[in-house]
Image (tube, rainbow, N blue to C red; front, side, top):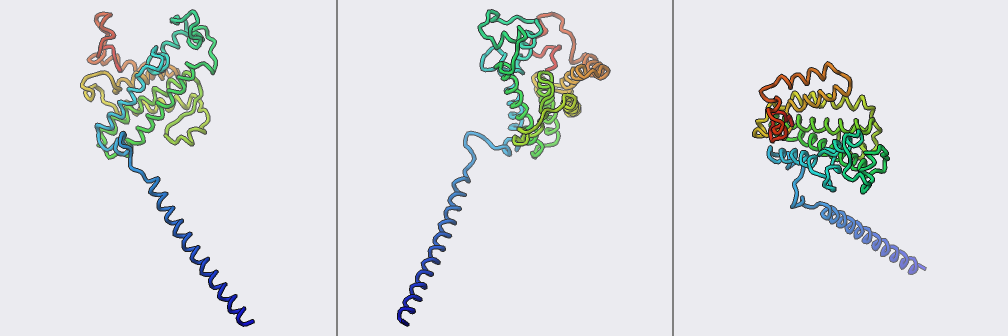
Length: 291
């Protein structure tokens, strides 16, 4: 009986040791797995692109990021006819057809999504309408991302002010298109896509107020000439912000404000005046060109 009891105790001791060893082994394996997983997800930056902090670490890279926004807004759409990109003449063409100022080149009905503008039979499923929406909001995201990266950058304040003014001008322009096309639209000012996806439509009056505030900031921050662009009228300056602000004031029926902004540009005859000949109007850096 004693031998049995002793044998049973020895067995329990052995089992206990085995359990203890197994626990140690499992803990070791779990720790190893965690370390391995950390190494697995801790990867080096991509070799064919740069990080946000790198973009805003020097003036030249930040300038290129800003020009990239201009470039995307100026490129023709996939169709090559300008209609696919709202900021490259697409809105002018589509709006002109809706107002009977233009006749579509395919009046015979080759592209019904274009003809719908001319016949005022637009539906939400129209591909051209969807293109406008799906391109303007990405432009808005890129502009907000630029502003956020810029504010956290170590760049000189004078550079940050000028770039901020340009980005706010572009954001105001994009929102101006959106509110005029769709009425109440989500007013997005950050890159937080999770919260942005849940934003309700903002009353158009609030959107216009945000546009006006951005343009006022842009006017105060932007230079009054084109010296930062080697004289080329290809990027926004103070007067571009004033011109758009004048237009926004007209749309919000602030006629006194519209007159004041427009007059400030017209009075600046050293930079802006009517071209002497009609063929000179659309020349590069024409005196009639603001942006």
